[in-house]
Image (cartoon, rainbow over all chains, first blue to last red; front, top):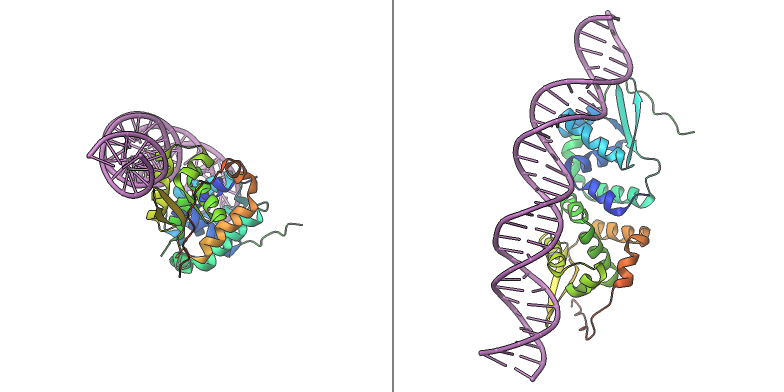
Length: 114
Length: 114
DNA sequence: AATGAATATATGATAAATCGTATATTTCAC
DNA sequence: GTGAAATATACGATTTATCATATATTCATT
C-alpha cells in the first residue's frame, strides 16, 4: 500500500520528479537515457531510481547491459492520475528534458505482461 | 506560477499534507482547529501553514482573534485536482484527523468573493 | 490599559536528505 | 578471460528541513 506521504516525498525532488514524468510519457527508460535527458551524473540518477523502486513506484527490468525503469504495475490509480495531470499541466517544466532525451539504439522490445 | 516541484515539496510532510487535505474538505480552517485535529503544537502548525502561504498554496484571512486558512484562489486547477484525488483515494490516511476535528464555536461566516 | 486567547516568528539544536567521489557488479564484444 | 560499457552501492561531507522552546504580536474583553 502506497501512502500519500511516501508518494509525495518521492515527487519532492527535481531529479526524481523529472525521471518519473519522463517515464510516464515514454513507458520505460533506462538509466543512461535519463542521464542525458536530465544532464546529471550516473550515480545520481541511479540512486534516485533506486529510491523510487524501493517505494514501489517504479519497477525495473534488465535487458542486456541496460536496466529499464517503468511505472510499477501496482501503482495505485490515483497516483497514476496525479502523474498524468502533472504532466499535462506542466509541459514547460519537462520540455528541456524532453529535448535532451535521446533513446538508446538497439532498444529491445518491451515484453507484454501476459 | 506554482511549479510542480514547489507544490510536491509542500505535500512532502505529514503535517502539511494533512492540513492541506483537511482544508480541502472543510473550505477553511483556523490554526486552533488544525491543532486539535492533528494533535500538534501551535508553533508547529503555524510554521507549516506559513510555508504553505509563502508558496501561494494557501491564503489566510483574519477574523477577530482567529486566522482562517483556505486554498489560495489562484491555486492551479491541476493542483486542486491532485488534492481532490488524494483525498478521495486515501480516506484512511485522513480519517483519524477528521475524527479529532472540532470546529470553533462562533465561526464567522465566510465572505463570498464577489 | 491590563489581561488572556489566538497566532506568528526567532533561535539554536537535531535529524534527514542530498551529493560527489570512489568502487563494485554485471554484461557484451573480442 | 580481458576490457569496456552500463549500472549499483558505499562512504563522508554538506546542505536542507524540522523541531522544541521561548518570545513577540494582535485582538477582544473588561
